[in-house]
Amino acid sequence: MIDKDITIEKLVAQMPEAVRFLMKKGIRCIACGEPVWGTLSEAAREKGFDDAAIEQFVAELNEMAAEVKSL
Image 1: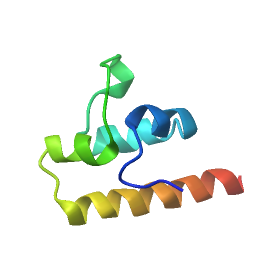
Image 2 (image 1 turned 90 degrees about the vertical axis):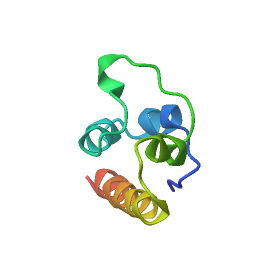
Image 3 (image 1 turned 90 degrees about the horizontal axis):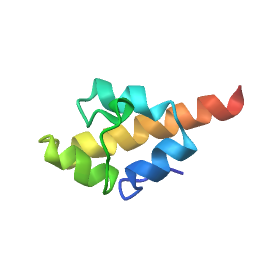
């Protein structure tokens, strides 16, 4: 299960599909090779997202993870 305290590195390793999702949200250019350190929450806060938005990201990422597992 994904939570707001997952590191970006771990999230991407577990679910590469998250890269596109995060880029659409404006959270770091992971695919361009920019190193990303810290948690999902920290990266989102750097881009100005609040707690509600971060919780929505977590919910959407968990839905994506469930869909990927079901394939």
